[in-house]
Image 1 (cartoon, helix red, strand yellow):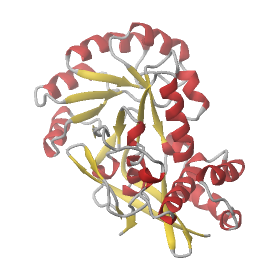
Image 2 (cartoon, helix red, strand yellow):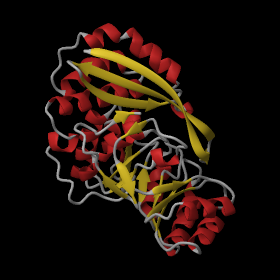
Image 3 (tube, one colour):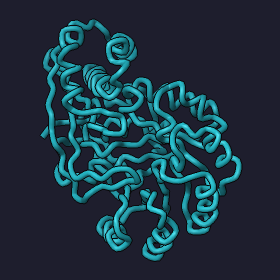
Length: 336
């Protein structure tokens, strides 16, 4: 097996702002694994919240190059378990590797990934499109720029109600809101009643990740479902979130790839939690991988490639929230 690493700086169409950071460029690492002329692709992005840089990931994976290339694993679970001891401190790199190996496995079988997993794509959910924090006028402009059936609105500015009230004047589609840890308990509960009247479907991660007492109070008293994001990182967090959140948003990079994400989603369903997968402003390499998990999901946020000025890969396409798979096997990804 041959390992190849490529780094990119992906420019965004607009400055993307959430409650704690703004970005104009998303540094990205692409991993390619090739066996006998067949290549699988994976990706991970830099993330300051988790202290992840492309340079760190590149260095980590180069140090593991010999172990990766000498692996005799034939299934993604086997490969993931083999790599985990070396990458426990860098699950973003593990994600990129796992994604590439999983893609490779399905391509070697001549199947699209969802076929390889034996998933039925008949009832796939629609993806939302994210509106980052900006002036209200700019947020309205972003909505008008791309009409969409579901918008996820980033909040955390203390002008939450004014923002949603104004945006609602311009659209009657589904709204979801994401505070990215920017609210306190009473603020969340109070906002939930007003936002419910404004047609919001759910609130994502209103409190700081480790505020479990607060999460319980919000869970018991909010008028809207609450979905965990920063509080749900790795597999053991699913059980931890049960009884504190109504649903979980799983990020492939945070948990270490498609392999653990599948287990997390299955466990969440067993516990009666709503299931969601989100993206991290990534290229079509990562987005196309997410698309094959859709049969396991109630909600999905896979709009990252739509936020880019220019993508680096072909793969799935999105049409008014609906996913259309590539005719290509595996995840359908081809680097441009």
